[in-house]
Figure (tube, rainbow, N blue to C red):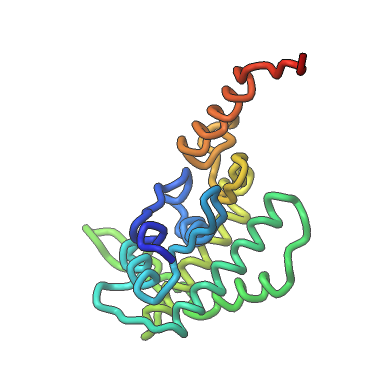
Length: 201
């Protein structure tokens, strides 16, 4: 892979929904695009950078290839489940099993604390392994995407060659980004305004 094509050299802009749903952001670290496939978790360095940037693991945590592959397996399972949801088809049982396993890795517990003279409930994920906790947090967010309010607004980019998923922020949106929307509009403009072909004399 050339340096110009590496994930670090071509950072991808967020699509609608990624700022609120870490599971969607994970799924969109791998997708097809017109210039070729993109993988933001192509090595352990990229995986730990992604996890750290989203606050899923504390700075300084190190992961190796085995942990990266684990994160990629969760990504693959989530993609299958979200694709099935968008297409209104039955999901792969293996993907569903993988999601449920991730949910049970470091399950959330509620804890009551006393703050400013009143009781408040906080959620925490007991566990010694930072990646275990991160995997469960991502899986829980994936459940919200599949069953919560965003589920009816989840869509695949309508631009040819792009397979990113996004959450529609308005009903008419069909593209994951302005770049894809502009590309589609430019292609339509070209088709509408190209010179007519003249038959040979």
